[in-house]
Length: 146
Image 1 (tube, helix red, strand yellow):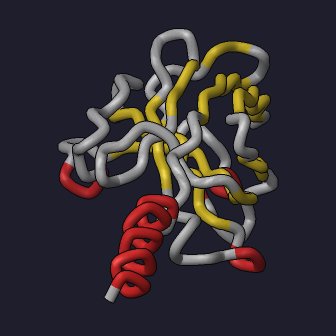
Image 2: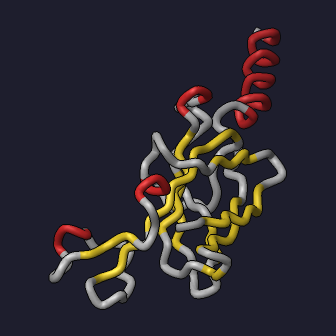
């Protein structure tokens, strides 16, 4: 009986160490033709070759007026797990050049929308941008070109 109590006690002490690793802070800046790109959606998708569903998840952020962003997990937590990611970008504007709200559906915007960026940045398969998130975090500048 005493041995069972010791084993159960040891398991309870070790149990909190099991599970997913903590979210890692990811920040950065997006520029287009050398200028900060506001209202750009930045998406981090696990690199397919390294995808582990327990430790890598999608993350996203929106740039502010200075082109700066913070990545958050879709569940609301700030950050994502360590790993290699493909990074996509989209900067939708309406037919007058005004940014559309983050939660708006482009197909429902009256007068239509256009992406300020070339389609390769929006495509998960074609994006040239990658990022490696380490346990110490990431602060990366993405210098996009037209």
